[in-house]
Amino acid sequence: MQPTFDQASHLLSLVRGKGPSLENIQALYALGIISDVFGVEDPSRIDREAVRLALGYDPFVFRVKIGGPETTDEIVAHLKANGLNNVNPLITQANLPLLARPVVEEDEIVIHDPGTSFSENEGLTILKQEGLLRPTYEHGLRFAREHETATTSKKKPFVIFLHEHWLDPRRRCRVLYLDRSSDNRELDLYYPDGGFDVICVLAGVRPRKPLAT
Image (tube, rainbow, N blue to C red; front, side, top):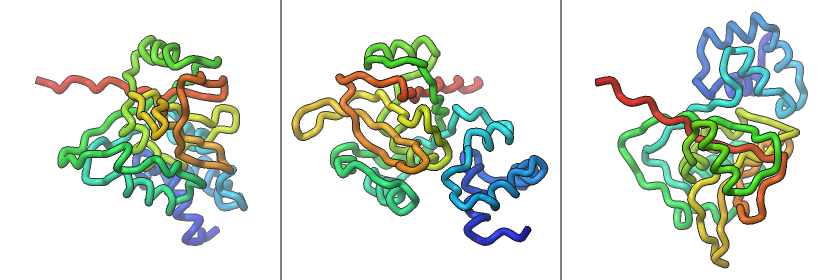
């Protein structure tokens, strides 16, 4: 079967978390996944976690580049142009600024499912117990920028970034979250003092390995 341009682009997007490669495409072909992808009328229904797992990737770990020249407003413009249904209008460079940094580093974002509802303090304790660091809002913004369609879940759609609070115009605490529902992808702000339901999962940062001396 000869793929259309749109089909090929979508296929590449499934493995873009680490960058598409010939080996990735060959693995997809050998597993029969290419035929499955091309046969799906609604690409949003594809189980991306299953595809990443089939390629040997951990479906709950995502690499995110930290730093560079991009502003929050530029990230929001990209998200709106590339499939997110909604981005909260309060997510701006003025409110959640990204400072241009010439040195780009890489962090691993781990999505952890507590398996229960949790408060903000409980969520931070869970991250610590899992050996994960508290994310910054930059982690949340750049995760959305790089992986907004690379993870999907019906049962656990909300990825919570428990960064240091941002105070909204009403002086209420807010944190970023990504809704990764297949039919309602959005980047929004949540009030952490209300607690988090069992359908929420936590984003934590894996500590960087010390540089070899």
